[in-house]
Length: 415
Image 1 (cartoon, rainbow, N blue to C red):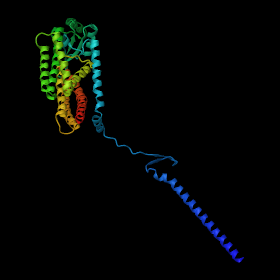
Image 2 (cartoon, rainbow, N blue to C red):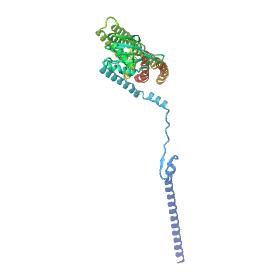
Image 3 (tube, rainbow, N blue to C red):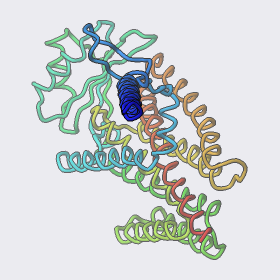
Image 4 (tube, one colour):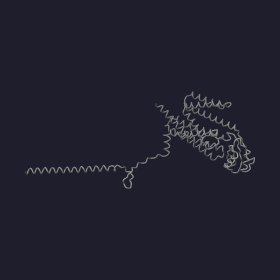
């Protein structure tokens, strides 16, 4: 019995010991589980970014993203010009369409595409010498009320910045003696020696204007053939187009004027344009660019109600010269030069071309400010408008299309 009790006591002690160990292990396991859960709960807080905005109660936190570094304005414009040049082409083409619409409205309402002064449409010019500082607007309104059908316009006659008289332009049906009598009642007596009258026949003015338009048209054809010889391909095609250009000029100016001859000359011009498009895109682009310069400038002149004179015609001819210069510079740099990338050659041409344009703009602006002659002022105003328009069409329209032409040509060569 003693041994059995002893063995029984020993087994109970062993069971109690094992139970105690199991309980201890269970507690340790639970403790470890709690520690693990606690760490899991704390981990997200440790991983949150250091830069955060905490609210007053300390519960809400907002993640702060680093600010993106903005490029300088000049660099952003440069990137747009380089990467999005095709989208930029929308600007010049939209302006060109608007110019066409405005010119069409001008033709529909007035019967002509430009408002001409006496030197181009005919009429009389009355020059009155007076030391009195006359109000031009009041004089013009007074005469328009007295002679509503005479298309009257008044301008100042200045010398060394001082008004020394006024010039009155009117249509052929205006009687100079009646004008002087009415003005004498309004501004005081005008003696015979204080005024002069010059007349321009409507047929003479109209003939001069038509001949001027023909001269501009032929200048476009010769400009095109010169550029085609430089940028085009095929000696035979160049010789044929040169001969056609000479024939068109002969039809326009040789012998007596004829509608049939003029129509033939215009048909030859269309044929030459089609030839340039097929054989030399750069040649056509220069012609399109110069045409855009002239048309948009003309539309702006009409918007400002500037009456075009013979001096204005000279200004438009000068615009053609400036436009050809900048476009040939651009085309030569992009197509003939091989050193550097297309973008580098473009910016090199732009640097030279813009320097030329800004230098001319400065000279034109100074002449416009200090000149007292109405003739010189009109030339300078039209030149100022034309140069600004040329900068848009040369460095956005022509540059963009030539870049597209080069990319397309490179793609064809690769495949």
